Image (tube, rainbow, N blue to C red; front, top):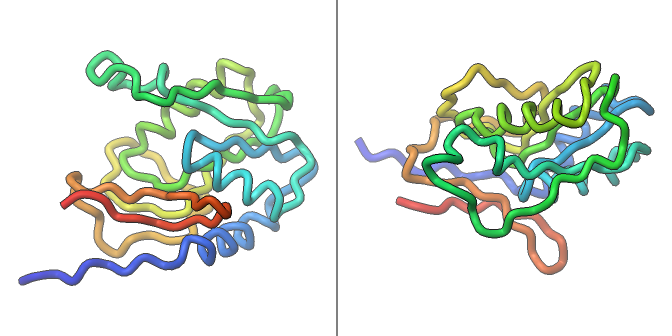
Length: 171
């Protein structure tokens, strides 16, 4: 039986939904930290939408990935930046698409290099299924009804005007 490809909701709509889910849980102590690259774009949008006062942080998890020795560094390495004090903070990690959980694991490892937060939650635009580690987002705007095959990649893209879109790549 041939399955119809799932239609993805509009990324801008999902961003607004995610902000609405998060709003009741955001306090003056909340620190938002995006995971490069799509997670940073999403975190920038959420930071403004939610009026978070702590400075926005960003992580590049390249050196903390468990496949680093096998795949090496990817082009476009970015510096991590956590301009707020993480020690004792309530942190929300932000990523665009949740897949195996390995990127989130790497992000938590790197986050703890900067200090020991009081709590860490995860916010994602889309959960595509296919988990390999016990990772679950507290805030998720959309969960795919069927996991995507490993040969496909769901990617958040940002237009020149700053608009966000989801794009499916691969077979």
